[in-house]
Image 1 (cartoon, rainbow, N blue to C red):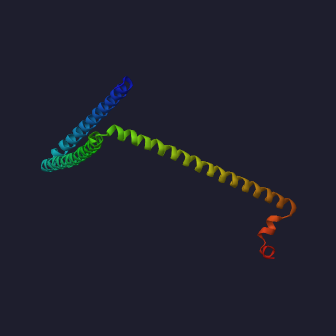
Image 2 (spheres, rainbow, N blue to C red):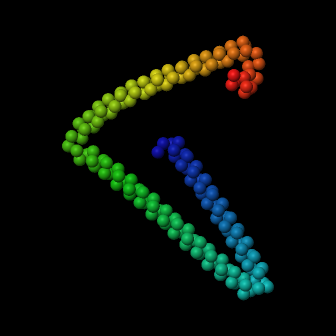
Image 3 (cartoon, rainbow, N blue to C red):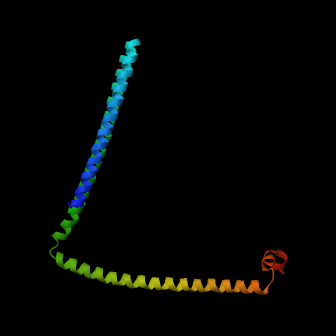
Length: 171
């Protein structure tokens, strides 16, 4: 790791630690508030406070189990994807190494790749030239259209009214 990567990694760890500490403090405060409210309820309704405490305890335990299973399922998927990637990479590298003429194959494929690259370059140049020609034609046609419109407006008075009037257009 470079020094800069190490610094950013350390900053990230510090930030994560601060967030975890803040989260622990919030949960501790919430728990203390909950216990305080339960104590106040217990003064008047002891049975209800005990029942409410047991209810919340069961609820939080079930929620924790639920989230732990979700996290475990995600971890299993991550492991499966890692194994798939390793298998795929190992298979491809084994195919390259297992060929006796691996170097020749790589050289030949690089030659083919170079030839293909040159063909693609020439095709791209031809396509760019065709695009530029079409763009120039469109530009000239737009200029001709603007020039003709200006000449029409100059020689024919009230051309917009004539253009809109249906009877004049038909005749």
